[in-house]
Amino acid sequence: MKLLSALTLASVVVIPSMAIAEHRGRSSYQSGPSMYLFGGVSAVEHDYKSSDFRYSFGDGSLTDVNSDTETTGLRLGLGFGFSPELALEMGFVDLGNLTASGFSDGSQVLNNGYTAGRVDMDGDVDGVFLGVKVHTPEREAMGLYARFGVYAWEFAGTVEDNSRSGKFSVEGTDPYIGVGLRFAVAENADLQIGYDHYVLDDDESVNMSANTLSADLVLRF
Image (cartoon, rainbow, N blue to C red; front, top):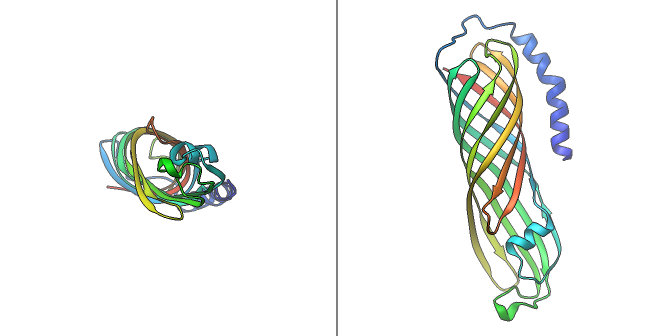
């Protein structure tokens, strides 16, 4: 949360002044269909608690669970604008790395559970998305947008204890939603600062989510 808060404050203070100084209006705005590329980096915070680790990877013997939920990610995408306020978007989102650890008392080792000692999980979350973006007219130097759609994701990595290591992979398709600000930095380029929420729930072994604060550069053609 500290990282997300700091980036939010910086974007609110710095970016609007840049947009006003660099761009007073669009001289060649096109109202017809358009295409654009976008991409950037994200500060990611996974909503992943000790109970989630026990739910996904526990055998009933784990205690003292700790997790590292703050990481960085990226987003790359392609957009098709159908009107000055509506676009279809698709692309790839990397939600970064998620790690957790705990200690097993070894009580389930005879049931193919963990051996006594430390247990570590290290995984990555990424996937592709398809959605809709609704925004204020692009001819304006500053504006708002909202985006929503579906995210087909994979959570994959390794789990290991003192005696063995194994790989895991969980997949799902869930909704995402986001809001943000847009600042024109050139005639055909914008800078977007946005918050997005991704649901990650396969209805069986994973029930979590991820929140991102992203800075994306948008290039229109």
